[in-house]
Length: 96
Length: 15
Image (cartoon, rainbow over all chains, first blue to last red; front, side, top):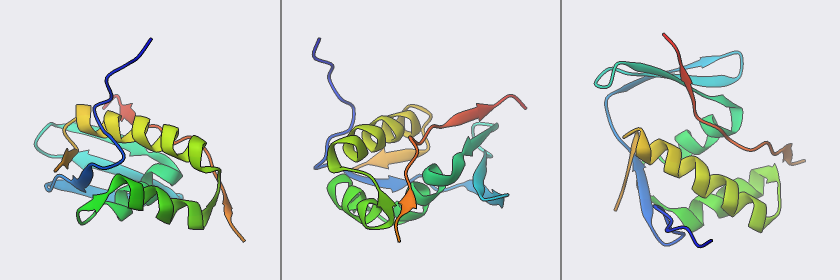
């Protein structure tokens, strides 16, 4: 089954402003004041969140993560795209 | 030394 992806490698993503972010024991937790929800992004999710502080192409984001983490490209792409789609669905990021 | 990769997941906390 082919699924239409919400985010592609050539998309540029950036954080939506208006969140309170804190580090708790190595994991990034976030309060969305506008939505009124708390989120736990975890360790890797926190790294991704830091990377998208300013607009960045998804392809570049993945390349940056691969320099820090022991992961192959295919797995990294699959995981990061799925995570970004979660963020997009919650209104935490925008794509350009 | 690269860090270990784990699949990132967005957890919505029930607060």
